[in-house]
Length: 180
Image 1: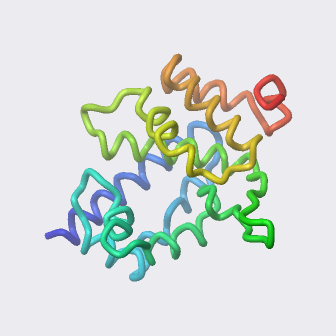
Image 2: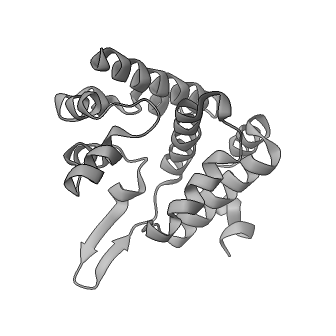
Image 3: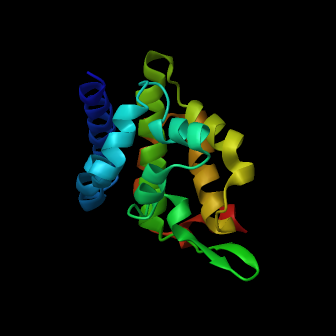
């Protein structure tokens, strides 16, 4: 039963991200988003720790202190900021994410919030979730500013207006007023 419920959750999420990506012109990313969640490494963890309202990877991390499923996932999905962190002698250093992955990350965060919050979802939730965790994020400063701007815009203007705004932008250079 948990296998079916987990499958439904990840598929619902994948479809929702795909719909959002399609609305901003990210067709390939919308189709390919999170395919690694169907791999055995990630799927078995999702089934074992499934609750439907919380990430199974976070549940695995709470129990073990780490999540093998998450390590597998973030290494294969460029829309996660963790993919872009290098570990140097001076410590972790974030690379600037290509803009198309920032757009996908936005869609991913919105869709995850919609799926996990259900009827309680409102457009301020993705920003609140970002703000709760941002002290731990190792994001390139420009990437962080653009993502925070988009999530704030979503909170203040709603999804339709935010997606319309994103469609007018083509890269970091279109956010000069934000990243200065």
